[in-house]
Image 1 (tube, rainbow, N blue to C red):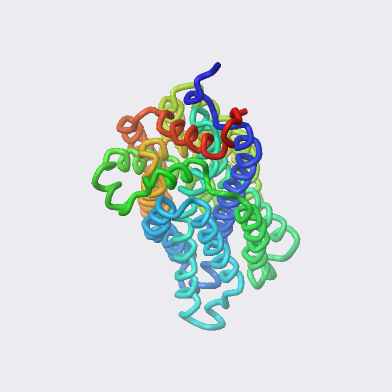
Image 2: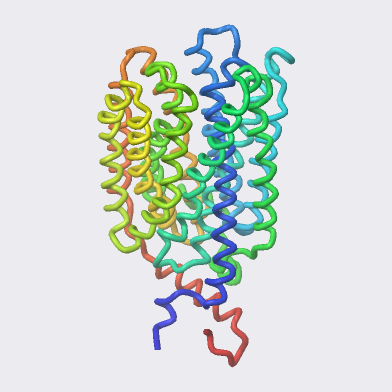
Length: 453
C-alpha cells in the first residue's frame, strides 16, 4: 500500500473541490488582469486626451502611466491587510472581498466623467479608483494561488498554482479583444467619447461569475487543517519580517524581471509602436492578442514542466532569455512590419510564460505553510512596486530622454539579472509540510471505520 503521506488527498477533494478551486482562481485573476489590461490600454490610448488635457502627447502619456503606477503602489497595502486576513480567517472569505473591490472600482471608472465635465476632480477620482483596484489586487493574487494549489497535490504545485497565472493572458485577451472590437466597430471620435467605457463596464459580468464560483467553494484543506490545529498566526506580517526575511527577498527579486518584461510587451509596446514606429493601434492590439492566446497554453505547461525539472532552473533560463530579447525585438519591429511585431511579441511572451508559469509555486513555497498567504502577498505586491509599477514610466522617460530603444533594453537586462539573484537566494520545493496537513484533513473528513479511497 502506498504511503499516504506521499500521495495526494482523497479523490473526492481532488476531483470536485479542486476543479472548483482551479476555476475560481482562474476567474478571479482573469478579472484582475482584465481590469488592469483595460486600464493599461486606456492609459496609453485614451486617458491622456480625456483626463490630462493641455499637455503635449508624451507628457500626457507619462501622466496617464502615473495613474497606472498608483495601482501597483497601492498593492502592498492590500498585501498587508488581506494577506494577514487570509492566514487568520481563511482564503475563501478574503477572496470574495478582493473580487468585489476590484470589480466595483473598475465599473466606476467606466462611469467616471472626464476632465471636460468636472475639471480636476476627474483625474483625482481616477487615481482614487485606481488605488482601490490596486488594494484589491494586492490581496487577490496570494489567495488565488493558494486556492488552487492547496486543493491539489503539493508535488504538482507548479501546475495547479498556474491557474492564477493564466489570469494575465486571459484578462489581456478579453480586454484587448473587447478594445479591438470597439475600435474596429466605431470611429475614433466615438471611441474617445464613450466607446472606451464599455470595456470597463463589462467587468460586472466577470465579477458576477467569479462570485458565483467562490461563494460555492469551501476553504482549502490545508487552511482547514491549520485551523483545526489552532496554528493560525496571531501576527503574520510581523512573523514574516522576523522569521522569513530571506524568503521574502527571494520572492520579491524573482518577480522583478517578469513584471518588467510583461510591461514592455503588453503596455509600453502600444506607445512605442504607434508613436515611434508609426503602426496603427489595431495592429499592435492584434499582436498582443496573439501573444496572449499562446500564453493560455504555455503558462500551465511551464508550471507542469517545473514540477518535473528543477523549478528554479526553468525560471532562470527563461529569465536570461527575456533579459536579452529586447536587443532583438526593437530592431525587428523598426521597419513597421506587423508579422515581425507579432513574432517579436509572441517570442517575448513565450519567455515570460516560462518565468510566470513556475512563479506562483516558487514564491509560495518559499514560506512556511501557516504564513504563506501573507508572505506570498507581500512578495508579490512589493515586487510590483519596483517592477510593473515603474516600468512603463521608466520606459517612456528613457525613450523621451535618449530618443532610442537601447536604454529601454538595458533596463530590462538589469531587471533580468535581479531576477536571477532572487532565484539564487530561493529554495527548492519541500511538499512534506503540506502533505502532513492534507493527510490530517483527509482523516478528519473520513468517517470512522471507512478507508480513504
